[in-house]
Image (tube, rainbow, N blue to C red; front, side):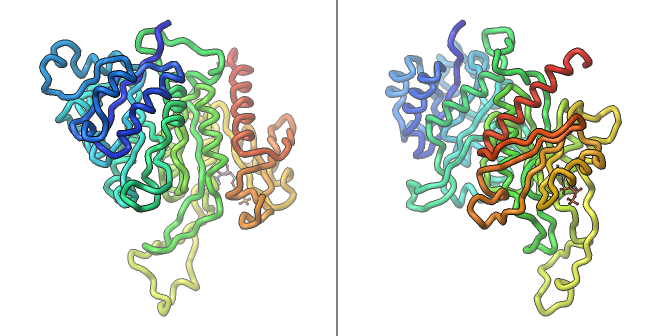
Length: 419
Ligand code: CTP
């Protein structure tokens, strides 16, 4: 079997100087790289150094007729198992979102049907700009995977989100994505550690924000960490995971299609769009209530209104997905955040919402206290089904996620014959 191949598209930002290191890290993961430089990237990294570290020709310009004759943008994409754009500048992200194709990099990206991962890098204000965020939402919806950016000191002297992820992390994420994608030169094969390959799984995570007026909203303390970890753990077992997330400060999990929403009603609509799926893992802390009427302009403190916000009940997303109809996922898992009589409440929820399992946790510890569940990194859960309860020790949320993902894989192994 030949080694997997990444087409590394290097955008014109200062982080381009890390490209040779990324090629080295990909090589350490057993992945060969072919590099494609934008014209601006050449200002930051030399084609010669990339050619020597990758051991391959470096591609630069759409109008280099020799390149087009002997290789062409279609062939560049065809030969790759994965396309990685690093650094992905705001300009490149904008072009990708718009489907522009005016140089070799953007033409190749528009011509490809291969999985694409981008590692954004830019100034924090460019990152936070609504235009960039809008473009990123478009790319997520197109199935592009994001890695980073990270927070830290930047070349421009500012501090914040916008640093390109470490090449070690990008290379590890590339390996994961390649493991999930059909190989360019092979028929799809099911790797032994991917028992969920071919399963579509919907995961919800984070809080929802229910607007009162343009500056205020009702929310809760959910950080989204547990749901994101579950999404990543399921993807690591080969599942095709679609995460629908409320507002969080977390980066998109690796190897997962992520859609960001704000309110419970947005989350319900996004979930319904994601159907049909084999399993739904509903970890979001959905606000049960929303203001009946969100005001279009900020309510002044002198006005009546804030002390008397009329609430109306939100739709129950879990209950609506778990309804017995032809679209019901084979496995529906609810989460229950309780502060007392945890198991009894969770059992009640299992029946009331028609779930197959409930992951119940005690959130009575305040999240502002170290070791608190909401916002913290550890969790202690009971996994409740109609056939009984398993109580797991307190462990990191990532371990809870890995254990839960294996239980999900076990469910599908047990139910294979009946499907
Ligand atoms: N949930 C949902 N939609 C809602 C509320 C909750 O999908 N509008 C899901 C959550 O994602 C979670 C489960 O339902 O998986 C439990 O949520 P919880 O708010 O604890 O349930 P409630 O029925 O509202 O019970 P409680 O009286 O404890 O608030």
